[in-house]
Image (cartoon, rainbow, N blue to C red):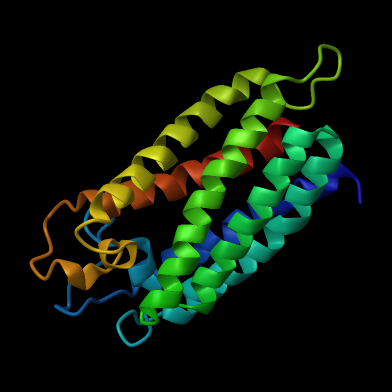
Length: 216
């Protein structure tokens, strides 16, 4: 299938994820009957079975979105034809499968869910790093993606790195799954930095994938 057709898989996958988020967020009522807030709720709370009223929509959106993006990522590696791009593809496929796994193992299955989420975060960082290098070293006359797009790659990389560093610093005190557990802080703050940073990672991921797709 031509790349100009396969690139549509990126926004299509993103749309599935965003639709699931919107449906679940609008109907969300937490343990204290609170509405969903992007400032102090983790993304995965939208998929917590038994708490989120439309957990099915969120989880289905992740499952479909992750799978739909796979063909685009693989074809992107074929188009670049470089080792760096294929390393990016390997990381990207793992990240997309991590997204799907987050939907398969929702927050109420915390251990498996956290493993899937950490896989996504780490693989997403590697994907952006390797593809960023692949974009940077493109030979003149064979530019597939404008090198200016690496400004977005740099921003996305820094957001990912900051979030993973925060998780790593919390590890001596409690494991990463507890850092991503909304019940780890019973008195939910008005602004929960870990939740805000997680949302930032998600948003830059969507912007980066869709930005790459439309820049081809």
